[in-house]
Length: 253
Image (cartoon, rainbow, N blue to C red; front, side, top):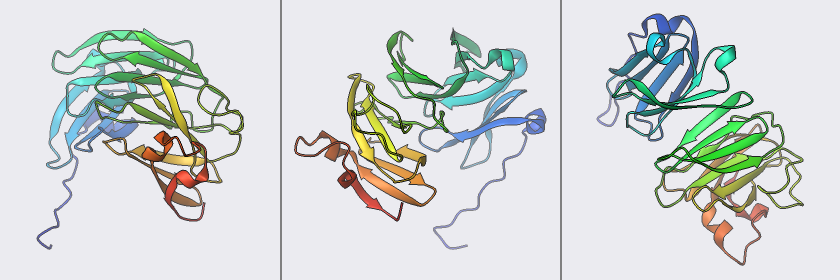
């Protein structure tokens, strides 16, 4: 190996979790890998491959989805059983106990966290909470989407941007009335609870998207290409928020 290359550590010691894995993902800065399933969840350091934390189903229950707040002890857990798929548990890994639980009227598709907000995505609604108090700040309607769990929340303390792909018929409050084509991404500020704008990122449905940690760049991908959006253009009064010109660099999409 060259001097700049490192061996990728093997992830070992999943134990009973390996039998039925329901979720695999990273925390916001990519320093931890989280694996979850019917037997609980485990957090692994990506540099060393060492287990940092393990929670058995006996304490936290079966888990279908996990969101870890950077490298803290705060986790958002979504129940893994069919009867628990609408249950959100905010979990303190240090104390090994639930901080609070919230039950929703439909299945939870995904959860996103930053230091100030928790965002819960359902099939037809988006709930935004104050992370400190878990008080509801805003509930938005949205049209059913082929990828209802797809969303990205900026981790910066000054920018609370949330980016979500829009269904073809999606209307206010997330986008302008004429935004009715595939490939649109809505951006809103979860701190001010106001819409920032919409971006025509692709001409085909968006299949992946991610904000960088500062919230200045939004990377997107569709089946036909990738793109990168400089979000500063959305804040410029001389720009049309939904214009395709907001795309900074895009291959054929």
